[in-house]
Image 1 (cartoon, helix red, strand yellow):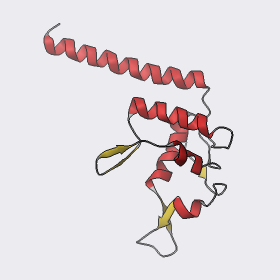
Image 2 (cartoon, helix red, strand yellow; image 1 turned 60 degrees about the vertical axis):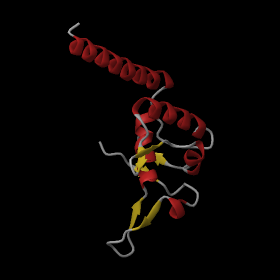
Image 3 (tube, one colour; image 1 turned 30 degrees about the vertical axis):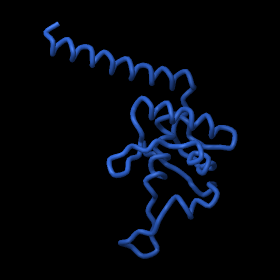
Image 4 (cartoon, helix red, strand yellow; image 1 turned 120 degrees about the vertical axis):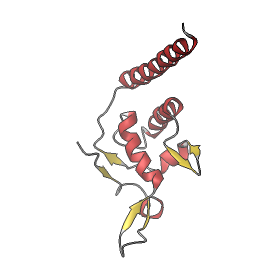
Length: 129
């Protein structure tokens, strides 16, 4: 299933969410920040950013990035999203499936514990234990 999105309800999105395509007249490309926040909707299980839920979206995204690493980077440096950046995208709508907060947290916990188990097993293998 494709990840569909609509930016038209994001205030002034044309000014910050895209830039002119240098290879095509009258065509635009999405900024890296815009692409990553669209994908983040799927990762955090919140398909829309609204005035009521943007803080929740940000908290989930911050937790996701704390576990998996920042979604964006520049010159090799990871750049986590800020609350103000998420707020700029109020109005973004995607077809990402909603995840209850319990489901979201269980997935994060499962990832962290599986990483810890892998690290322990690798350490035991390396030390012959």
